[in-house]
Amino acid sequence: MFDSIGMVDEAYKDGSGSEHGIYQAYKLALYLYALQKVSGAYHYGLEENIFRSLRPDGGFRSGHGERSRL
Image (tube, rainbow, N blue to C red; front, side):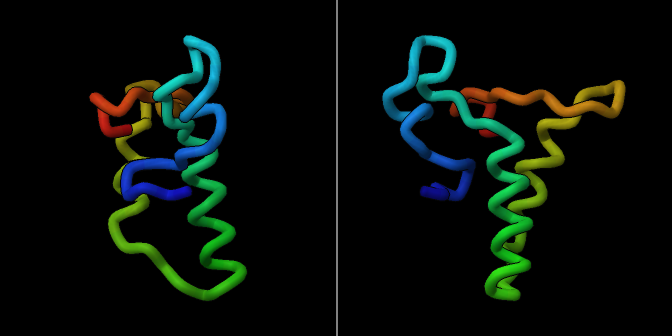
């Protein structure tokens, strides 16, 4: 379900208007964490997508459309 930008799940594909086409930063972070723990693999560059969701105050924006590419 990872498409090199974010996680494409049911909410992304078929969700309501506020969910459809919106990537969720926490799903991407969880994917990266699980990938490292389960397989020991690392997907280089993935953390850059997570860092793009940082807000100026240090928090994270949760939902991002494809146009913003997370």
